[in-house]
Image (cartoon, rainbow, N blue to C red; front, side):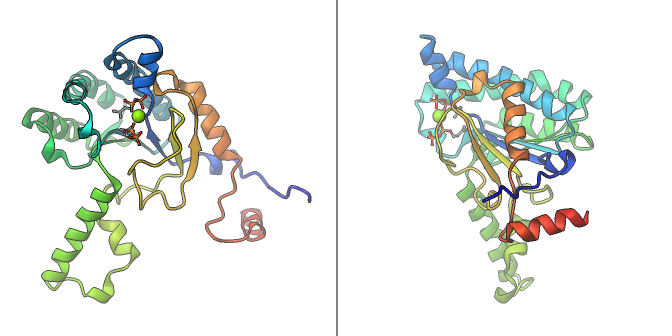
Length: 254
Ligand code: IPE
Ligand code: IPE
Ligand code: MG
């Protein structure tokens, strides 16, 4: 059969929202006989490069999975090292983000963090709140299931107050209670480090996201690697349940 795929225009094919599981720091360090900490440190450099790329290429949202709600299970030393790294990175980078028009936000249960880190998070969000450039979302102590739980608690409270009837609970209402409900859902999901799983990242929001997995370890993931992922994305045909023919007809109408 002939390949009927009609590529979308470059502009339409650019993802508005890229969500990344930054995995492979530990293995990157191990390969070099370095402590895992060195891998996390090298990973911060990658974050800088990827944020820079997205900001310069008019990507609207970049969501980075920095620490999952399950990562507390790691050795105490690694957890506190990561917390220290978040703190130091925030301290160092917020002014630069602000100067570049980037709006910084955090999603996840921040109540588990030290008061100092919570303050830094709030200060970083406040300082950049009015910026109109890239939305940089850091998922920290985040879990997709946590997100759904907190959404359900909010809905239950609304029902309890009589603001919402049980029959009014629909997908739209649930979506609105989730983290970053005001931003478009991810178009492109990237996981580095070779594992092919979602590890409790944005579960609801990934319903129709294009998935991209690469063996490249996060510290080695450079701007060219990101470009390759975006290129791959631009060849996909997103059907959202329609047939390919329907999608082609609609794209020809444009
Ligand atoms: C991802 O790298 C960073 C965090 C989870 C904080 P890992 O630390 O999971 O690296 P690997 O998977 O052990 O190589
Ligand atoms: C997912 O990576 C979480 C982050 C990158 C922050 P993990 O390395 O924790 O995932 P699993 O445990 O291999 O699924
Ligand atoms: Mg890992």
